Image 1 (cartoon, rainbow, N blue to C red):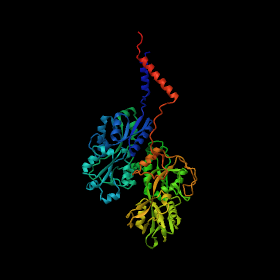
Image 2 (image 1 turned 135 degrees about the vertical axis):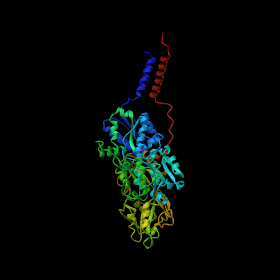
Image 3 (image 1 turned 45 degrees about the horizontal axis):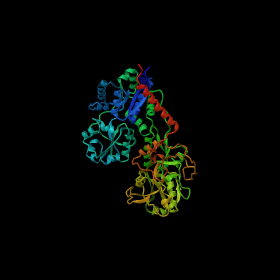
Image 4 (image 1 turned 90 degrees about the horizontal axis):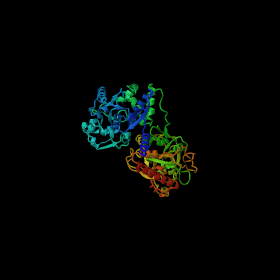
Amino acid sequence: MSIRAIIAILATVLALAGCTEEDGKIRIGAKNFGESKILAHMMAAVIAEQGIPVEGVVEYENTPSILEALKRGDIDAYPEYNGTGLVMLGQSPLADGDAATERVKQIFEPLGISWRERIGVANNYGLAMLPERAEDMRLTDMSQLVRRSSEVTIGIEDDFTARPLDGLTPMTQRYGFEFGEIVEVPLSDRGTLYDQLLDGKVDVIEVYTTDGQIADYGLTLLQDDLQFFPVYELAPIVRLESLARHPALGGALDALGGKFTNEEMQALNRRVDLEGRSPEAVARDALARLGLIAAGAVEAEDPLMIAASPLLAESDLASTALRSARRAYVGREVTIDPSHDPLAEVANGNARLALVGAESFFDLSGPTPVRTEAFEGLAAVGANAVHLVSPTGDAGVGALSEATELIVGPEGSASYRIATILTDALGLTAALTVTDATSAGDLLTLLDAKGKVAVLPAPVGSDMIAAAFSSAELKLLPVDGWTQGANLVKYPFLRQTRIPGGSYGRQFTAVETLSSQAVLAGPAPVPAIATIGDQGPGATAAPALKPVPTSTVQALAAGITGGELIDPVLPLAAAFAPTLPTPPAAMNPSADVSVLNVALVLMFVWLFWLYVRREAP
């Protein structure tokens, strides 16, 4: 055999080695948001129940890409909306669901695509606002928004921008909107629109009307009074070629027809988008309850717990931490676990993360605070300002130094630890009254005698404190004399700050106080060996859990609006370490590597000589 033939055979073998045979499995596509993923996994489950092999669910970034994948044969089926199907083929959207379905069936069949039975859900587009913002602007429908649109920032996802007939541009033209600012996010990040709305970054957002967040957050949907948005009824669509290859495929998908309502779909979406559950587990659980599949939900992991002191657990900071963790831990349920000593819960493995103030990283039992190295900061969530609350009038005190009793939360809580620091730093004679109060309201009801002052670390403008000020005669006391002595050096994790005048009812002047950064904390890679004091994170010196992976740390930090850095006095996760340049590779490799390189060169020279030499006649 000639050298040329040998080389040709080798090339063919190598090419075949990189190929895979068609295994006949059904591939399901999904758009990159919760509802589409749930329905895609439902389709996969009912198909597999008929004994048809299913490869899995493939996610796509937007509607054009997934539709093209279906037409090209990269996937066999995916869930789609009849209104979207019309728009993507340049048809005028319709408000009549039956008419829209008949039309999409007609125009998709020449493309080799079949529309199956609708599942009963109509997920239309809409514009949503915080109820108080809509009330302030006196808005109930989209036409009323036109006159105020120049003052408004709207949040949308990029798929809405690209839609030619029912997206941003045609909506703006139909209603005459002139938005002051447009904030756009990728379709895969559309959940962040709700975060931006809740955080006040945008005034109105584009939503899907079956989103679980609408009811959960109590949002106001503006009425589409010009009926611009068409109906969007959900149904599986599948390649005709795939139906011919698997005769039972059509019937399996049609089994989903009419099985769900908008309210049921909203509840399923909530489990995925807000509770962090796996779309596959939610889909299988719903199908099992309907008797469409024999097996129940996929085995789900236990909820991921974030430990926080009871007073901190009810704050806005806890909500921010929850939203961040639910994005970082995709498919996991994440909950806040109230605990008197949050870091102890991490140390003994009962919680994965802890939401704590900066002071919790320090052992306060000795004459000088000692930083605990068993834990590390993963993401900055915000700041707690120290609120020293006293009754007004004769029942109150004029200064903190006059207090005879400091009312605080449970031991280990931020309230307790801050009061301990203030007593030491300012030489206070007030006694600490430790309570089991689980809310700011409960703590403030104990201000029933002269000389009592409540210690409440909370974000400036906290709703829970604002509610207390609106129902009782209360005032804030300043922290005086903090810069005297060595307090700035001894307690570097406490920063001087100011609560601006007007932050609460009847609080007309600014109040000087202290603040500590609130962070999500996790176990450090190398646990501390030193004994932790009685005011530290429990009796366990070494956390039972492994450190949080770098990728998850980065996701936690990225999920919090503002991108604040963790206070440098705290132990930082390795993910925040500066990246050092990679040193150049060694110029002199080891002896065995050198011999192998020479051998390879000689082999290629020999092969080349065999190839180019002429054979003897």
